[in-house]
Amino acid sequence: MSSEHEELLKAEAYALGALDADERGAFESHLGRCVACRRAVDAAAAAATGIALTAESVPVPPGSGDRLVARFRSDVQGALPRQDNGGGAGLAILMAAVAVAGLAFGGWSKSEADRQRARADLLAGQVAALQEKVDDCHKERSAQKLDVERLAQLNRILDAPDLQTYKLKKTGPVGRGEVEIAYSPTRGVAVIGESVPEFKDQVYKLWALEGGAPVPMGHIDLSGSGPIHVEGPRQVASVKFALSLEPRSNPNVTKPTQLAYLPG
Amino acid sequence: VSRDVDVDRDLETMTRIGRGEEAALEQLFERHGPAVFGLARRILDDQQLAEEVLQDAFLRVARDAKSYRSTSAGVLPWLMRIARNGAIDVLRRRKRDRKAAAPEVLSFVPDERAASALDGVQLEEFSGEARKALAELPDGPRRALELAYFGGLTQTEIAEKLSVPLGTAKTWVRSGLITLRDRLGRFVGGRAS
Image 1 (cartoon, each protein chain N blue to C red):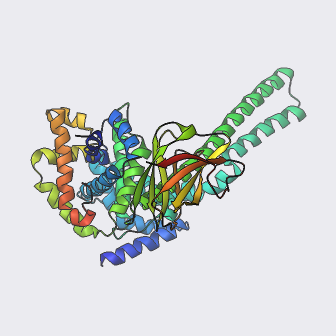
Image 2 (image 1 turned 90 degrees about the vertical axis):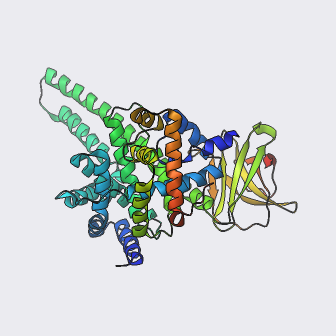
Image 3 (image 1 turned 30 degrees about the horizontal axis):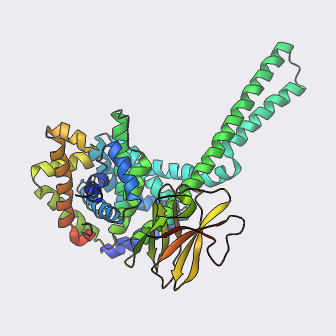
């Protein structure tokens, strides 16, 4: 039995969330590069939904709908404006400013002034920490949004009835290894791989090889959250793809400069 | 009311929720709240925690309403998967499981993938058939599936709970779900090998 096949045996347990933690991590890494296992997980997860539907319906607790709407109002409807203007941090900054203004114009004794100064310092530190958290949250949300959109698009490609998959092997400066191309003429093309090296001054570019004339399919940005890249629908006659490395400053070349991954 | 009408209603409701309409969220809650609450309570056996999971599931769907992709199964399978993953996460945290499954891993990958696999499903018929299929499974696989799905147990924990070797627990989980998948094949396509 091949190791690929052994992984396939885990699809059902994974779909149920029943794999042990160490197995789950390894299986998820494998999922990123195995179409057969992704399809098996699809079918198993859909069947698992059948189990959910065997639970009996129960009337919701009184007032639950009202509580939901209240949370919707504050969490969802109110989220964007607060996020855009930095809400909580703005309030904290205002509080710090008030404390400092008190120092400038108040008639406190020295010890009172010292206390207020210490309090202002403390507040300023809290504001800075809070601001940092807000910035981190914004960054995290942006990355998650990108991930979700990208993975949703990837799923659509992987579920396409006209899906074709190809393996590309590393060559030249990127060492050994491979990436997988998932191509659907109607839904798009995705590049999936692990340990794809990044280069500061270069970007990857995907090419379709059509009768010796390479057709550019798009740049690949690895700076997001992983080496998965998806492009919209593209029609090419080719059944061969390649990845090249191009200068980051000018990736719009018409011919590959330095081939990095070739058909395996 | 035919399923098609329900599905159209779900899509229209989700579109309105995406625009921030509270009334639309209330309608969705009225339509699917009892099913989602039933699942959460079955998993958690706790009214208060189940209500939190219920609300979190609806809020998550409301947040992502704009990206909702309609399937003929409607929005309920999506809600159920979110609620199940949320409830299992609570269950595991409650049990102080040091390795509680990361919610994003549990909720995202299978959610999205199963949603596409369920496209074309007539939900009422699907749930009826699922009930029958689960009840007709041999005792071992059925209990293994229920412990995994409703109890959030891993295969190792199932083996301990049922006092069987790990290999047996793994076989029960796999064969149980494959039998279920085959029985529900006309709904879910039975595409896996």
